[in-house]
Structure formats: structure tokens, C-alpha cells
Image 1: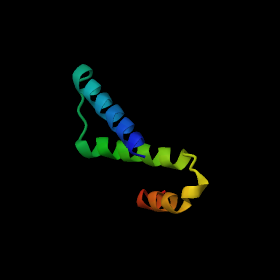
Image 2: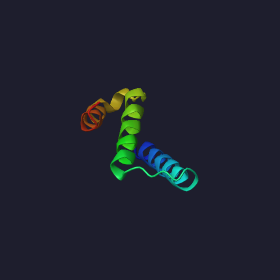
Image 3: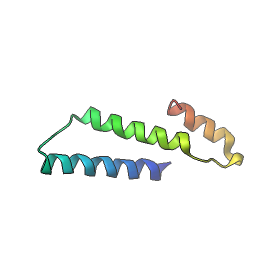
Length: 66
């Protein structure tokens, strides 16, 4: 889970920096964070979970509204 959030964060920050430098476009922070949140939710929806941790999976999914 932490790895997915880290990877998505790095991707969105890099993408925003690239747009800011090369295209002279800057988005509001809330828009960048919203994209990050949506990416993590999508990763959680498509993730294959091990069955022995079913209780923890339900808690994680409910925290992310999945």
C-alpha cells in the first residue's frame, strides 16, 4: 500500500513539474492531490489481495471508499 502511494506521488509530482517547466502550465494543488487519490483508489480496486488478511483488506478498502 505504501509503495503504491509513493509511486503515484512521485509520478504526479514529476508530471506537474514537467508541465510547469516545459508547457508553462500550473495546476492547483488540490487538482494534483485529487489525481493522486484517484490513482491510488484505482490501484486498490484492481489489486489481488491474499485471502488470509481478509479483515485488514476490508478496513483498507473502506478507508479509501472502494
